[in-house]
Image 1 (cartoon, rainbow, N blue to C red):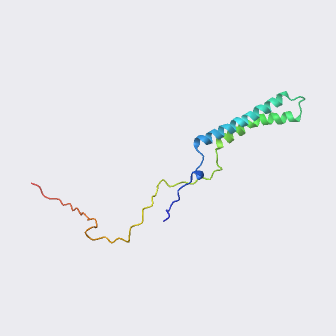
Image 2 (cartoon, helix red, strand yellow; image 1 turned 90 degrees about the horizontal axis):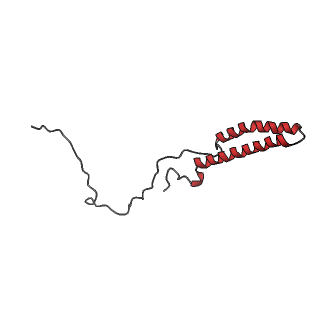
Amino acid sequence: MKSKHPVPAVTSLPQSPQDEADHRVRRYVLTMAIRIVCFALMMFVQPYGWYTWVFALAAAVLPYIAVVFANAGSDSTDTTAESPVQELEAPAPAETLPVAPEAAPGVFTIHESRQDRE
């Protein structure tokens, strides 16, 4: 007997918030390290030429790109909402054993009525 809702596999779960934050920090640090290299190349590569302007442009634009990528998060994972209700399958009822009427559980009925008290 199959359940209505499949149990999610561990591999289908999204990345944990801590792992995603660590990945974003590493990406930010890498981008800023490239910016520092571009700034150093702009200052120390002689003679100055058109490539100096390319290094300067990269050093000026990379902080913006680093912040945008760090704040973007990981949208590439396909996440779906999982039902918070966990369903367990009940065993099939034993239809082969006859149930005697006296062995069947009794039903208790309680009737409440208001009685006049003196």
